[in-house]
Figure 1 (tube, rainbow, N blue to C red):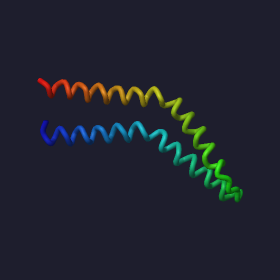
Figure 2: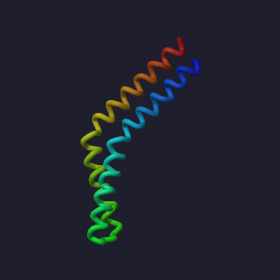
Figure 3: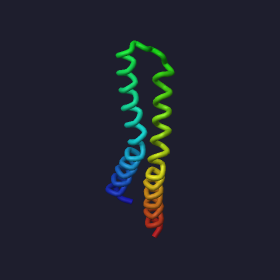
Figure 4: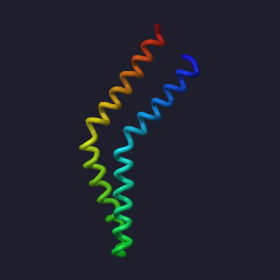
Length: 89
């Protein structure tokens, strides 16, 4: 295994992690901004108002994007195992 392969493997791992985490992270950011704007307009400072909508939104997005995320992770793991198998030969 040379340094180019190690760099490729690290980059591919980080790209996959970013793609897998993107739907949930974007959901948290968007819902957080919307709830913060709502709290600023109405002057409501309840902590449960910030947590509950995020949990509901993240759960919904996880249900919607779960099969895509699983497919990405399976593709990644299959490619990693294929590389491991090729190193032995």
